[in-house]
Length: 324
Image (cartoon, rainbow, N blue to C red; front, side, top):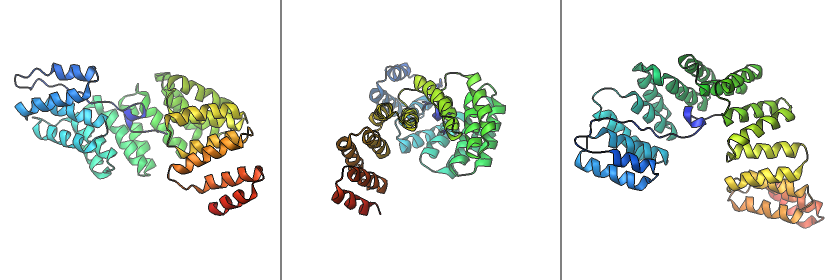
């Protein structure tokens, strides 16, 4: 239900500016980033570092760019260089390096960086760090410790809705749905434009069997995040529940376009087509799912069902045997 602190909304670039560049005008690099000319920006900052290898801003900008594009090894090296060069402990760089380690699944290193960042006592970033620790513990299955960190994040910055969203998600996992509902709604009071919170509320109402409210919250999430595959897919699931297979197909097709390699969306499309009587198209989607390189037994069972319905007994038996 959630991701790393600010990652539950989007990945952000750490852009920290220092006036330590010795005679260098770094505005050009910053302008290139604003213009989304990222390759040119990287080349520019490397040129700066050729002339002055101790330029903190150049290292930070490179680290942020590499982090944004998922080049975590390079991002880690740049943040490590920043920590070596900084005249005093750098909370933001420690936290950012912890996030990079998290993405690399180096959880012990990530925790160490987050704890070191917290120890510096910067209240302005404490909420972010507590959230990062919470997500680190959650992914390791340490739900109680995760909830503790999210609660600390809420205490640190009561006006930030993200810790509320993350805490509610943990409570939902723990089966404390009533508490989760209340905290999600607090998050929306703080910021009514968070698609992820509406999505999570939709999931909770679906678990409760309240499909009408689930649909309402998924629709609100969709208006805010129309390109989020999870939201679009779950809308399809609601219409499938209502046996509106045309609408289910419509949303699942939109979701599949957002993630063409998702075999489960291809399976869902096949189901929606099958129940509309479009068996040939359903078989094609099943075969597409199998061509993704995953001989999923569930797909084989579905194909057996479709062929059986079409009275193609030989094919039905073959796929049924493959599903065992």
